[in-house]
Amino acid sequence: MLAAIRAFFAQRDVLEVETPILSRAATTDPSLASLSTVRCAPGAPDGETLYLHTSPEYPMKRLLAAGSGPIYQICKVFRDGERGRLHHPEFSLLEWYRPGWDSERLMGEVADLVRRVLGRSDLGVERIAYRDLFVDRLALDPWTARIDELRGAACARGVRGAHRLDLDVDGWLDLLLTHLLEPSLGRGCMSFLYAYPPTQAALARISSGDPPVAERFELYIDGIELANGFHELTDAAEQRRRLREDNARRRALALPVMPVDEAFLGALESGLPDAAGVALGLDRLLMVATGAPRIDAVIAFPVESA
Image 1: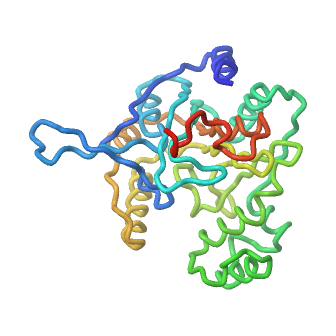
Image 2: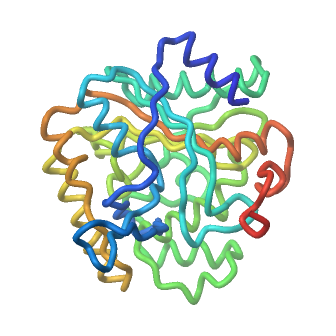
């Protein structure tokens, strides 16, 4: 699989790069937990805390801003508190960036790569707008639905424990998506879910349409989320605002506030080219390729035996 991926990008003149696994900064996303270690640093008697990256996104964007052109990376990433059928605290990620592309064009390349890796040149594609998915299958408009409507939909459709949950709108939308909608996606084809609510933009830009949408997509096969892509945000001030908002949400949730990557923000300020980027989970892709029911089946040494 790795050889096929490298051959794919070599044919398209995309440069393979490496970036650090350890960083003084960490992700501020409240839904992600970073693993950390302490380095014995000169002048720091208590040591210096370094974080294992949850994605190579920030340093790769620094390379883009420095003029690297199209780049990709295959690396290990780390996320604490994640363990289950599809989750492992250490996993393999493919991430790549295409200057001058938008998310729609990148979806086409993602589909080409997946067909190559799976050896399924006939594998079809469907593209579904996030809003249409909720309206068509749950009769809910995610842009206008109230919390009581979202909770009622989860309870009526048998989502266990939904009546006890206290979530915001995005929390309820995510619950409905993962429990009721995702299992039907990517059945006999690749399903690209796109045009997310602006409140779920993460590092994607927001379109100026009516209504505005986050220029973001996710790929599903066999009900499994494989990839998350963006038409990348290049506005440094807006990115800083989002990172601060993330940390404010962390405080409200009693989660540790994380150090912001100022070098990444500096790269945005210096001029990040218009680009689209995507991260694809290679362990999950290998699950699809082999028909494995659990991520443990495609990892030589799961964390319990590492």
